[in-house]
Image (cartoon, rainbow, N blue to C red; front, side):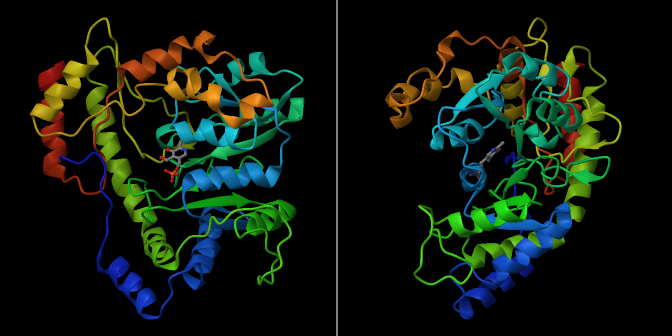
Length: 379
Ligand SMILES: Cc1ncc(COP(=O)(O)O)c(C=O)c1O
């Protein structure tokens, strides 16, 4: 329980990695192709394109869409910094939106207030594995002719009415970082139903090559390829993903039900028809009643890993308060003065959440111990 996250690796992953290396499969190859095929089937899209990590997946999606520099993309501030930074890579401007106090996901009503003639896209993040309100977001996008790019890096297995996240927008992006619901260590995936976009992204991730490969290059591009030994890990992980998701769900529900015993502590609200991916379980305390740092320290004293993962939301990160001033695109496009942005719900949730481990390595006995400790702290 010392680890907040813990990959579930068995002899199967080790064996396939070993066979791959023995066959000299070091670079992106047949494991990667198979992983793409099975991941596309898992989420239900026509195309899945693997990348070297989730940040590269977002970068690739945005490069694929080729949105003009200076255009604004609306995204939540309560997320991992990569959601925002990848918007900046091609000269686009992150516009930070408030979150919903019950789901901790981007608030569609607040998106409407931020749309300007310069807005080109919405980039919702399914935070902690809980799907954003994709119906409301897609309605706004349709009405205002905006592109939707889903950051599903935390949300493998998350669904709305059985439809997997990452398939609601034009393009969806996943991470296989070592803490995620399924891992390759470092790795990522982009999914889409759009043939042209998929072809463009396949070229951009491979030095602008055409489908035949070789040394003909058609686009200024990158190397975002996923090494085959890592794709091997992903293949085995994907085949046992549903089992791991079921375990995470059981663990998360046990903790969520325990938290519901206490006043003034809140868990993410899961609407009817929504399947949470249960990547992270991070309840939020009312700071009038509890000091979250004390809660985290008490849990740690009892041997239970805990942390405030996004204690500093993106708009308050040094990146956007200071770093942006020396960003190369700042010479060419105008960024808002991020220090003036006020997002009270985001700031409250960032300040007052604490993570509890729900990974598949947690035993029933450990869950009961966590429950007893939570009752001691909050009861
Ligand atoms: C919401 C979100 N977006 C993007 C990323 C970036 O993924 P990676 O770490 O694989 O580059 C992560 C990874 O933690 C994430 O949680």
